[in-house]
Image 1 (cartoon, helix red, strand yellow):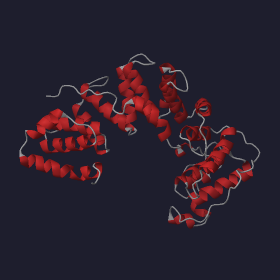
Image 2 (image 1 turned 135 degrees about the vertical axis):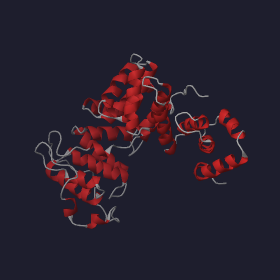
Image 3 (image 1 turned 30 degrees about the vertical axis):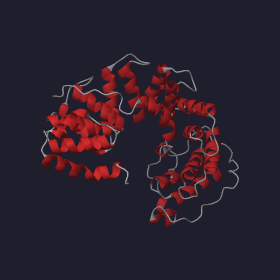
Image 4 (image 1 turned 90 degrees about the horizontal axis):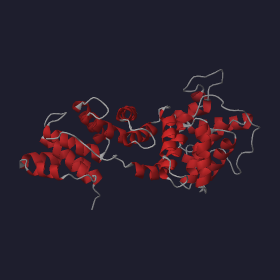
Length: 361
């Protein structure tokens, strides 16, 4: 029988604090519509900047005239003209985005357009990948107060891209961007306070930063703040608030939050107990590749809690979780007690997953 499911933070938040900064990509969706911030005189573009070579378009329509991007994917706001460069970027018309952003830099000195040029060079979208040029454009925009550029430039320093590697400067940029309301920067800055290397470890300060980012809908921050509420670090322990935040992050499809919220639902920790909902969420996370969710789902299926008893599915998910590094002696024993036919059916069902998880000899 399974009465409760308990597990340490699935992803190990200490591990996340070391790896999440370098893993974070620039959040392109944070580009605003219209010009933001005071205009500055048009700068001299980074040396060596060239118009893009004619690469095969990301979408066939990119070869069409600019009319293909004549309207932004988002409406004009506050009386500002639609952001045609960003609209083209969002639809994958990277050559059009580059040309429009270049025009806006030349004519208006628009820092948002500079940031977009940095993003295009950073990822090699429509132009050859060039991290040095990307860093120069990000710096031009950051110096003019663009918080997204500050964030991107900080990530370049932390991940040693574009010839940059200055964690002190990265921390300064994240601090500046966070003060301007950049949620991703606030989250990453909070991780630095958890890490305790760039700054003295300060859970309370990390919680403040996570809270600021979480209130803007940042799922990573919601998950991180939930773990602090769960453990009572930097904030007063509050399992109800932890569950609420886990639920919000899970709704935004944060995989770690899906697993922990499912555990909270199954155990009734900070939220009304709901085994069926927990099983459904475990299944969703299992299908997304979480070995912990796969293991928990296998346990539920082995006893019929929250889902119908299903030995074949239970063993299947156990084999998949085990291949992903999450073994379970109880499930080994459960599998050994089943008939050869059930084990064979489970192995057949798990085979497509195992072919991907296990390296070929």
